[in-house]
Structures are given as C-alpha cells and as structure tokens.
Image 1 (tube, rainbow, N blue to C red):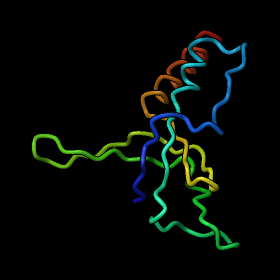
Image 2: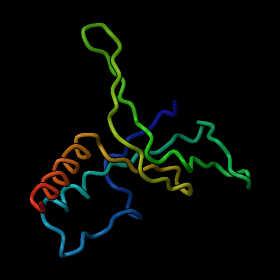
Image 3: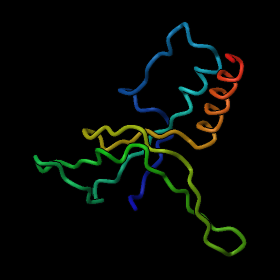
Length: 113
C-alpha cells in the first residue's frame, strides 16, 4: 500500500477549463477528481530508466482507512486514473462520482432504446 497526501486544491499545472459545450452535470463530474501526492520518502517501482513509475496502476483502487467504534475500517474510496511522475502526483475519481456516471450512462442507454 502506498500512503498519499491528499492535496486541498488542484495543482495549477493540472487545472483545465471545462469546454463550453459540457453540461453542468458533466462539468461537475469532471471537477470531481482529486489529487494526491506520494511522499518523497516512499519507494516506488522503477521503470527501465530507473525512474519512479507507477504506470499500469491506473484503474486500481484507492483505499480509505479509519476507525469506527474502536474497530479499524477500510473501504474503496476512489479509482486511480492518472500519474504525473514529475511531481509524484496522482489523480483519482471518488467512487460516488463513478456510481453517478454509471447511472447516467445507464439512463442514456435506456432512453436511446
């Protein structure tokens, strides 16, 4: 498991304006991403050049861990979607956002029938 430092704001290099043709719901979904930094002291897999590289982990789960009623709890909190090696930052989609998107996709499919 790789610990993450959740970033409060989207890092400036990764800010993008939503295209004007996106609906408000699609813009909300696109803005649901969160960013987290992998601390420098955490050793990561290396690529053939010897550089830190977590390529291939996109689509993998990000687990939340916490205590409730004196018991350790864990859950799938998000899905990792992008890796920015120069800053050791990942982008992820929270699970509730994925559920919302899948529901909208299903509605689109049903309406198209």
